[in-house]
Length: 406
Image 1: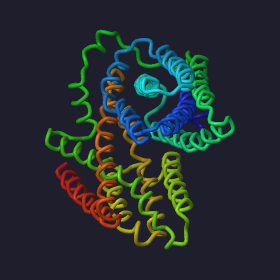
Image 2: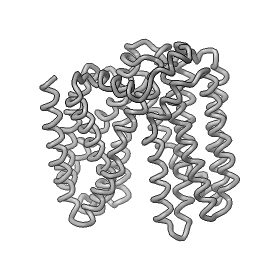
Image 3: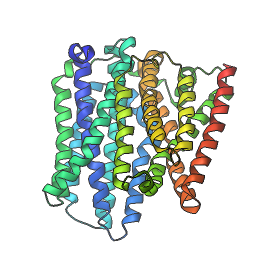
Image 4: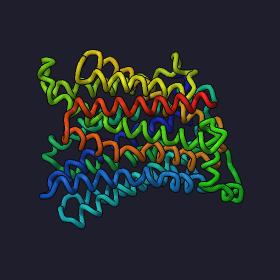
């Protein structure tokens, strides 16, 4: 709280992040509900899901663009207002329905998400310059928790707005645009505090994606290419398995009556537990995990994942406890990684290295979701959970072996 009270740069960036997260949550929900009104809803919803992944896959290039941008504070403000204008255009188009309109709305969402990635790259040097190294985990943990809360609040708020306005997608889109305009206004009013280490354009132009590769290797504490690629493979594999947890919660709880719970209550309970763990894990940074090395934190997460997969369909109360512990621990990863990033990567490379991390973390997610959903429908939820536990055990062994080498 001291950081929030006394650091004007952080306070303005956190306030803008809050509005950005609320706007993104509103628009994602509205776009999915809008897509569901089409004749071939499954196709359009699948298409929108694919489009949402694209900005993550090109995150390193967006980060490189952010690194090479001069006048970052002005660009950050302009990007927020550009997002607002995009969603005003979305509000105009969303009153109609056709393939061309849907594609246009999807492209607007794509551009909006790319701008969000660009803003993250612009914001990083400001945080690096204005927040001390010992406060970085707390700073990023709070941003993560606030964004999680806004995502949780945004979805029911979006449903409420749709209900009150008699399914007016236009008004909800305008509310989303307003969030981004307000975000831009907050940043504009605090523009004199949005300082960063200024570098000449010639110095910035020298770095590339190859430089980012070397910086990432150094950041993850890997001296040789073999160990580095093993760790990257482990991170991708972990996210591949994690992608199955959400669908498995939904599918396993179809049999929730044996625990004396209706399906809706069981899903709500698990979502509340998971979200609470994420929020508390982000906010409570000064705990026993503060000094954990990155690889040790991953090992603990893998152990909790194995235990959770083995208990979810067998001992639900224990699985709920493990789910909370798992989400609490997962919430430590991003703040710790961001703190390492700020402490070890030069200001002019923050965007591209941060974008590379996002891409690596997300690349296994879509495949994991599809594979585990398909396997559950082909066999049983129990068998799929056992497969997930076996895969996680193999990943644990590889990571443990790689950690001992270093």
